[in-house]
Length: 83
Image (cartoon, rainbow, N blue to C red; front, side, top):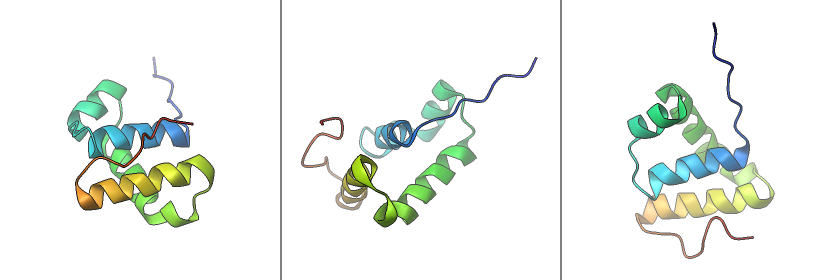
């Protein structure tokens, strides 16, 4: 029997990317835990970094913080989960 695909919201994808970029959880661990193919994870990461400027609302704020944290290799100045 085929396993049904899981669909993640933009906020869920940001939270998953955050765990890798800020919490330093290895991609292999995240993918195993969530049942993701690594290519899916890397596609999300690529899309978020390329489209960060065109995103809107809360996703844009999260992406901005993720980019900043990745570039400075430090924690963001505020919580990604607040609001």
